[in-house]
Image (tube, rainbow over all chains, first blue to last red; front, side, top):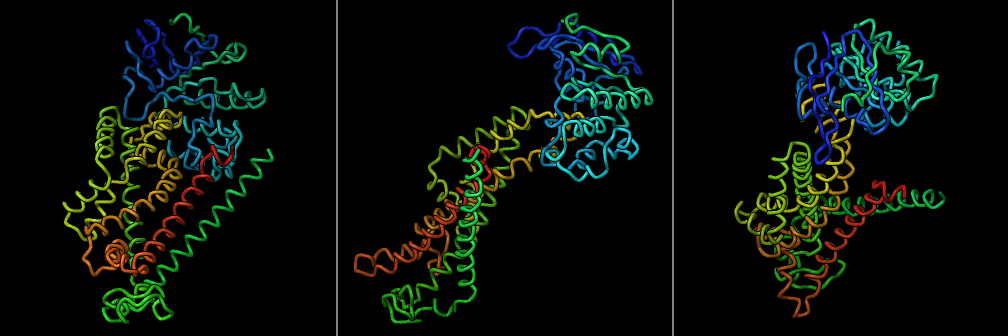
Length: 201
Length: 279
């Protein structure tokens, strides 16, 4: 039971190779950090893990099966900018429904107030929106989460509150987690293992 | 700061004024179409070729038909055909524009080819051809016009959707297993709705003028139908003999309707377009 990256190679069209023969694995129930300076391909790696872009070579398998192209993907990516990850014309209740009927206790644990459901993204703060994005990613069929600089935009208190509650749920469900961040203090605190993105190039 | 704060309410106020004018004109035409006595359009309703008077505001034609009643009926026919054809055209633009931008290179190539082809054929000739093939009447006019006015809006929609398509919420939706159709309908359509509304209103004047052009050239309706184009073409031979009212009034009212709606479209665009409303 693991998210396995095996011999992965990727380059943007016309660009130099970004990853070459990259391999690592994320066991279910463990938290793996990806570190590295800006512009070294951390976010691209996140998109590759979630299946948003396809590798040139090698592949990503989830518990032995390749990532599906046209169905629900058991690897869910949580983006850095929640305001870009929701359609601004939708109400928040529709944003959640697009994924699944999120149980009220999950909403409560993530600190989402029931009255926010009727609002549109423009009427919520970034931290509030990001909680919705997390709730959306916690689909019953989700096996792995990839958090790409998930809390980099928020103050320390919001950051701590979000991570505390998410990791609790992740541990309960036995999910695997990939945390992409440039904050070593955060990674040192929450990760079982860290991979420097430079070693994958 | 002050300029943008000043500009926005003015844009809104201009829009409301324009909207009021269009609503008033349309209400007059519709009410006239319903209330005016159709008997006035029969031959010998008045003396033939009498100039404008209180009894016949726009005069009468060579058969003694009241030109005011005929003009109002012609305008309401123009408006009805305008709404129908502009709506059909807008839907075609939206569907093709979204498909071209979302559904891969192959579909994009096909749609772009159809757009290039349709733009390449001279407008009026294309319309006449289509109206002729369908066989005249209202279906011929509607199809002929609807199938020749969608191209530029489709290009705008395609460009808009190409910007939306790489948005993160679209990727999330794919990752949640949502189908391309769901994404096109639920994610993309609400975002391009303002563009479609402006496109629809701005298409309206074109469509009405082309309807008048087609009927003027004799495609579409039977000669007794009071369409503006038919009124104008009937009036043409009489202008040189001094019967100015036969062409001037139908032409002038058509111009007024078209200008009012075109102005409304421009003002909706000014208010909705972020570049001009918040700039």
